Length: 141
Image (cartoon, rainbow, N blue to C red):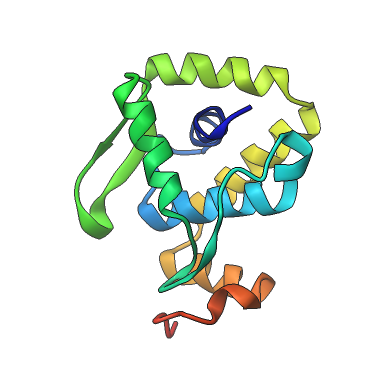
């Protein structure tokens, strides 16, 4: 598995079609941190940033998916959204079917988790579980 395949699998596992920037970053952080080594990772190099764990590589991997015609983004700033399209979803199903069901289940659980929380609740939850990711925070929620 590579970054793009993991990102496809994660994005296709959500309860909604699209993810905000903070949801995308925290989704990939939780997967990479908690099951990354078991599925061939870690895939990214997250570091503490303004709102917790961040790696610009997540956006680069998403950009590669867009260039391959498997995903799309829309909006800008805090309103930017990321999602897979139908071609990407078909590939994501294939990726998910090739990994252990325990890990596919975890990816889906994390995708649902990040999508159901507000920005404040999501960032706070990450800081509570991973306090080392709070050191450079501008977040005061």
